[in-house]
Image (cartoon, rainbow, N blue to C red; front, side, top):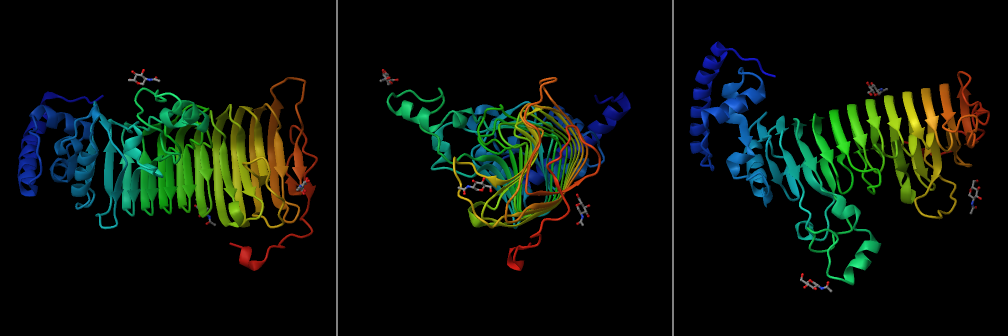
Length: 464
Ligand SMILES: *[C@@H]1O[C@H](CO)[C@@H](O)[C@H](O)[C@H]1NC(C)=O
Ligand SMILES: *[C@@H]1O[C@H](CO)[C@@H](O)[C@H](O)[C@H]1NC(C)=O
Ligand SMILES: *[C@@H]1O[C@H](CO)[C@@H](O)[C@H](O)[C@H]1NC(C)=O
């Protein structure tokens, strides 16, 4: 990929000489473990950076986990080396933690945390990081495996992979555990005990501002692959999440209490929602995303256990869904309060999706949830140019009797049953008000025009 002529090699060699000297000086000053760099090694590293302009800067601001004793053999626990590299990078503005390609790093639960770190740290991930699969490493259970918290400007980029080795958790169902206790066989060969019932998210960002995730793959997470909680200014691009369609609760990307988020060029295959947008999210733009297998792009479930939820200004555009449970969905629990508003789903292409368009204000993940009058208000929801095939029902709008959905608009909807000339169930609407801006295929005659009689019935304390 890199074309280099002999003149530039000579030039680079000179630079590399400086580069190496800088590193010696730096390492001696820091008194850190220092692994002798060959010119060739330095050259590789320099070429990997794809340029020479920042060579001198690199020498003092790049912290390679191999220089901190990481083995990268896929068996030795390299957590300490990662923590040590981070501790040094944390002190330097715009530094880089380097996880080089060609190695597999076994890393246990780890937190890379501010708030006392310098801003704009880059985590350059070109190698592979794998999670431990023995229950001891997880203790009584953790909510996440790799965590970045309270940082200003944090980037993870590269062509590397984070592998949660989640199958040991997915298979660890209550049934499997019961069978297991009667023998001394472990669920998988590597397992030496039951995995905790708390399954960790693979990669979580918390309380950070200016977060970029680019290029990397996260696969086989025990639970959610990539999660942002309490973050602002989030950019995800060229990102891949990959786990089997039957792996439980493995959301692709999960957003919570986060604002100003752009997700683009993502390929998400998982066992739950490809993207899940939870309470506290606004100004979210998702485009050029592939989803499947998975449960689709979902806002919610919101308002569980009578909580207040606020979600607004969400745009989902140019999304391709294949073999998913739903396409674009809003789900809220009865009994909640707050609102979901200003949502646009446009240019959505679907193939063999069970239910392409869904609003469910009766969301319930058990067999029965009792009816309650309060609800998370759903309004100003736009569906534009949504096409493809479905296997169960094209449109399902189930809204609250006490707080109907309003301002639901549909334009250019073309949904075909996979069974040609044999329609499955038709569109369903309950207490759903809005407007058909074009004729639709199939016709959606159940939408009520105008505004619901009791629009705005929510008390002001319930509004967002
Ligand atoms: C338990 O494990 C031991 C050692 O691996 C083996 O010899 C023994 O047969 C096992 N017992 C049962 C009930 O599987
Ligand atoms: C809505 O979100 C977009 C980003 O997706 C942003 O550019 C726009 O300013 C937001 N609109 C409002 C009214 O906040
Ligand atoms: C709850 O409300 C729904 C929709 O109005 C209705 O169909 C259902 O029968 C109700 N269930 C109970 C237990 O009241």
